[in-house]
Image (cartoon, rainbow, N blue to C red; front, side, top):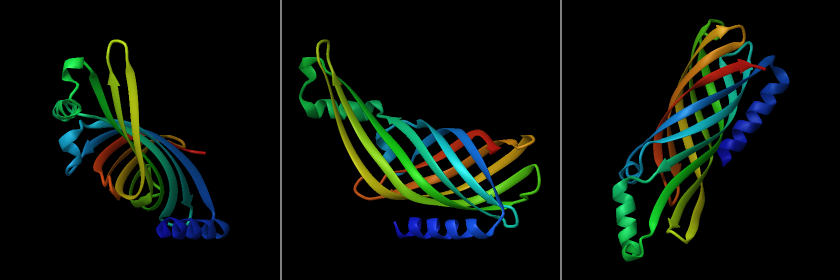
Length: 198
């Protein structure tokens, strides 16, 4: 939390004294579960929207992003959960989904910022809203249980941008998501989409 406040303070003070430009990106995400997370869930998909503030006379930029990703339980996890419910004879079906919604502030360092091809390293930090969804269904019955936790997390990342038209480029980004708390999940992602100047 202190890191987020510090980044917001630094970015707001820099905004007053530096010329800048805004950009927006929208990407589709392919997420790969890591550590214990991948034992229970398949790889997931998601979307990210990110607003960038570039400083004209500096390689540094700040950004604010909101993502959403969904991971579906693998067959082994669903089978173990089904057996634990002792409802096998009742013909219930179960859907188990893990949702991750990170809301992050990022500091970025750009290389070749005046060229069509740009490379950037960054570190994001902020809130991850993690929801574990259990849905139980049968022919005449449906019940959903949600378990939501909010955790602090970080997202170091590397991105490549290539300008295809004036003020519009394609963006490829890869990074590592790690949360710290009772859920403590980790996953890597690969993001691909468009970035454009506002």
